[in-house]
Structure formats: C-alpha cells, structure tokens
Image (cartoon, one colour):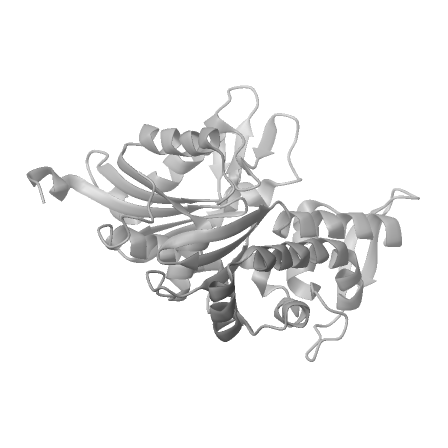
Length: 342
C-alpha cells in the first residue's frame, strides 16, 4: 500500500448494452440505461441515462439519441467515452472532491469479445482517468455475483442473458472451460415484438413501447401458472396512419419470441455437448444458473429446464448479479488475479 493509494478511488463498472451499473464503496451508485442524447449541431451530449432514455423516439432533427454499445461492445467510441465520463462524474461521493481522483477500475466484457474491442474498452477507461484498469468476463462476474465459488475444482454453468448478448459458460478452477456468446438477447426480443405487432396487428410501435410490452406481458411459454393481465398497446396504424390501440396477451408474445428463445436453447445445448464428462457430471448435480435482465422473462427457466432436463436457478437480483460480481472482484483483487485481464 503506497502513499498514493490514499488518493485512488475504486469503481466497478458493468458496461451493458441496455444498462450501465457502477459500484463505488460497495454500493450501486449508478444504475441507468446506456443511452446518450446528442446535439447534432454542436456534437455536445445534452443528456445521459434515464433523461436521454425519455427522449428516445421523441426527438426532433437537432437531437439524436445514441446507444453507444451494440451487442455488448463499444460501437460508438466517442459517445461511450463521454457517457462513462459523465456517469463517473455524477457519482455522489466523487462530486464533492476538488480534483478528479485517479481510478482503479474493474470493467466486465462479453466472453466472445475480440482483442480490438477489448482495447477500445480499456482506452475508454484510461481516458476517464483510469490508472489501473482490469477487465473481467461477464459470465465469470455473474458467477461471482451469484455466490458460486469459482475457484473450486467443480463445474458450474452460467447463462447470462443481457441486452446485446447471451453469454453461456462452463466455469471451473477460476477459468472458463468452454463458452459461447450469442447475439440473441433482450434487444432481439424487443425487435421481435415490434415485428410481431406490425405483422399481426398492423400496429407500428417504437422501441420503448416494445420494451414495456416485454416487461409487462413477456413470456417464454404459452401456459403460465400465474399469467399477467392483457395489455393495451398504443401506436400508429399502418393502414390508415391514425394512432390506434390494440390488446396483446402473454401467449402472443410467447409466439413472437419463440424463434429467438429457440436459438438460446440450441446454444445452451451446444455448450453442454462440448463440456468434458467430469464437468458434465458436476452440472447434473448443480444445475444451471441464470443471470442478466433477460432471465426475468416469465417461464424461461421452465422452458430451459424442459429442454436440458436440468434444474435451473435464477439469481436473486439477476439485473445486478454481474455488477455485484465485478464489485467483489475489485475488493479481492489479489484473490481473483487469475480471473482478471490486466
């Protein structure tokens, strides 16, 4: 512990396609949508997070909303850098400081990321005053966050369904034995719903409305024990051009999402088929852990369980499992040094 360590602030970031979460001093201090609103003329960022999310789909020509991350990786370098910088500056305890402190950061990345994309994340972090930057793979962070002891010589299977990617990994001895990253997740579910509303109801709905449908009546199976009420959806009629309302039930959404969920199921089966036999025996005992916002889709655990014949467990706060794990890795850097990528 050097003298300068006193001036270093530690933060853990889960840079997600849909939401960005930041942990500082063991508390989640930032939890907001990964979206920025930009003035087209000056190129300045007007709003970030929740405020920018409210503008989505409602802007005029001088303002555009950007989601800087696509499929779990940085798609718009400048916007993402400004977003990270603004979010870090809005952390309450760092606001009070006279000068910007140096940061020790742990950031999580998808397991299917390339070297170039990894460097982009790292450079973004270094530009916002990151003195020590460590990266951790999402499924690994999710496993730590769920409370799995990843250092044991025992196989655990994690399925992390985020906004841009679904990460499937078999973890043992503090490493990923086999993994698969599929670009089918929350965002694809949302576009499936938009497409379904257009083709079946002749109703054109925006992304935010589709997201609301997914949360309120989204389902992975057509027979739920506790079905949600039908939902009234407003949008634009594609035939007349007038605003109109239609009613949707969870069964319709289950039909709309069927193909995408099938792709996730196939990827899970493929990962299981590549698992070494000793680890497969462990997974038969321990089951499969689900994390990420996508795992909150009604009936998904039941559907995966029927497909794999394994017990499926959903993390207790699936949205925050990854950032919790990142925070734990940050606190115990020495213990998890083999897991982190410097």
